[in-house]
Length: 72
Image (cartoon, rainbow, N blue to C red):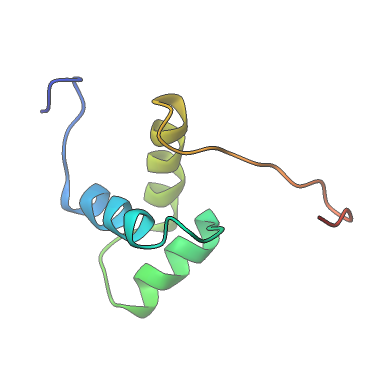
């Protein structure tokens, strides 16, 4: 475990690495999960969602919810 009481896993490292490499882009949880799947990385969609929630709660990323049917 790290100093914050959370386990550091390979999956989290893969997700965080992808986010850091693409920090200038708008990313979605589904987009991250699809990328991992296409790259044959062992990360499930639910893991991506859970870890993004952790990053939001820690203040590392921002979460935006777009209402269905509304644009930009």
